[in-house]
Image (cartoon, rainbow, N blue to C red; front, side, top):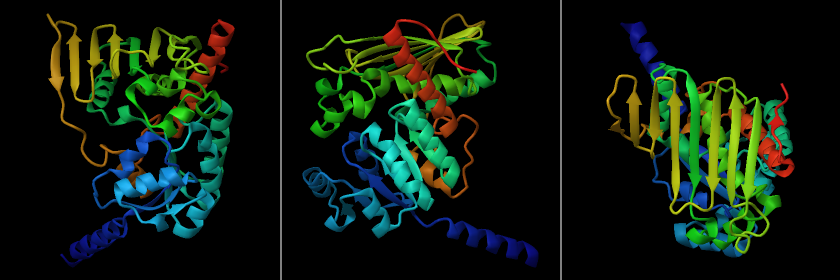
Length: 361
């Protein structure tokens, strides 16, 4: 009995030692997704300790909106790291800036989470991967669709062979266009810049499909990639594509990614076809299913995922605290997102050459 009490006490001590809020720094405020962390209800698991943003007008706007003290904001990420000592940094600047964030954080053992996609191009991604490996930091990528209960139920069904061998996965992502939906001026400025964003819709929304298809395929790389990039609205987006279709070739299966700034409404949905059934992930909670033997499809409404699997920052803390071990090729993982960058790189090359790009083995 005494031994049991001692073990229980040690477990409580260990649990309390890991219950301190994760100290997080924010690198950049130009990505509108930063509202995700700044507007997040206080769950007691994270603490934003500093913000790096050189645009003082933009920084003041966020300080006013979220009642943040001026002392939290620094001109550079290096100063923010030095003064606040974060355990992790979340990147909410341009995709091009992701490499600079990792370069600043990795040597200090500071973990990094970036907003999708991982990097502006494959070269940057490889440099980031090398730094993460060298300094043993976590380098995660956050996607909105990672937190959809429907996608995780779909994976479970695929792994349980409920739809048979995969034949086709079609992923639709996008909206009417960033200008049309009214994103902030700071966000729009780099989102439509081919250097800062790496492309238009192909990068902004093509990454979702590449991420999900890689995950559903257990980390399998495609054999080849073909893509068509177009400008339906060159007067609005003169320097980047606003329409992208990417075809992924796998043994016995194909993936189709439809990324667009031209949908009549916002959407993030997916169709999974197997040899014996299909799964339609319509949104974060609604799933339509038809399996072999069913006379018609049926709809399942799911509950939201439970903490810490419902939120990027809770997951980040769990991974850093070693309470969560990411499965191979997890949606947030570096290994999955390196394949995403290979796919996007090949898609852009294919569109330029108007040829299929075969991936190197």
